Image 1 (cartoon, rainbow, N blue to C red):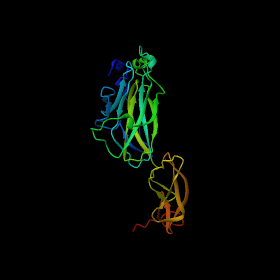
Image 2 (cartoon, rainbow, N blue to C red):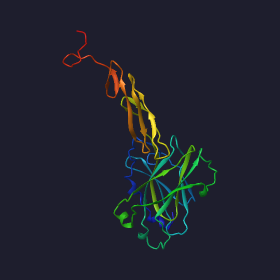
Image 3 (cartoon, one colour):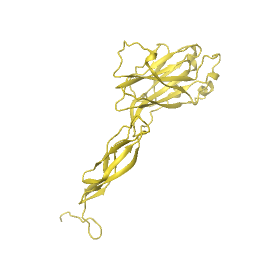
Length: 288
């Protein structure tokens, strides 16, 4: 860490950063807040980003990466994740949570300080050998990331955490997996967490028909038509269909199944009809 490192956010401000609860239409490929061991991410050069691990109140590790060489011009510091298997994803989403120092609050930086960093990715069919040379030109740029809120020295003194959350879409992903890379060009950043996920329409029951888990198409404007299968003891009245949208939501239900003769719908399934007395009650058939 350079002399500018003292301006980086202190770890005690990160103690309250916990994993967000997932949603049913997300499949998480990586969440650094749930990794118990070392992340083993790579830095280029080795004295660029600093990997720091602290424990929270539940004795869970908080993995953060910090860089703050704001006093020195022409910074080009890279941080690369481990290999992330894409599973069924055609495109993925990267959620970044980070803090970034306000350059105007740092004295004597004279134009060398930046307030953005860059996100890149590299697709591969497997993890790269450890001997592979790191070449920035191999990586495709996703976006330049800026903070909605930056922190100052006053915020540090008041223990105020100005945490930013940014989500970027990455894809199409056509190979078996990929790496993420973060380029610092002279900012004062603490990368608090990285979550990578893709969206899917979860398996569901609608109109007495079962629909399997479905991954949306790469084209966000297209819907995936999915045909349902009638539940046991049900038969098609009209072909049951649902459409899987890009955000993992089921849309436009069509058709339905109905219970077969001698069965009735109960809690989304078809069960054998119960004989009822004239009063509407099910008679007690327990022998005396």
